[in-house]
Length: 119
Image (cartoon, rainbow, N blue to C red):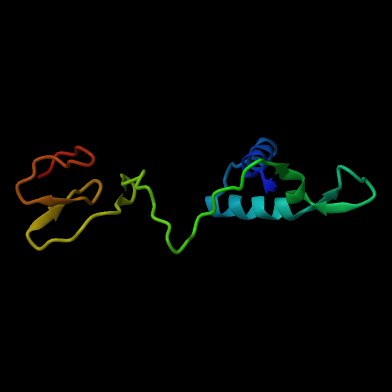
């Protein structure tokens, strides 16, 4: 079965393109356009094909497909000091960390997420 080798495609793109002054969205959009560019067919130089097809590789097994309706994130990133804790819950009798936004008890001296001293 032939499958798309996305890792190899991304590595080739990253090695040939600068990412300076680029947002993740812009980088992804440029990568998608780059994959869709027409290039000479490696097997028949007289023909051309989308660059994406040059990254097709033969594998002995079917890839694992992710069902978007049933997909549950692993929770590998639970919080970020920039954006706060994604799993915070609001409570009427608590307070929030001034650094990361985690919900705290009124008596908390330190934030359990980021360790910031609380007032």
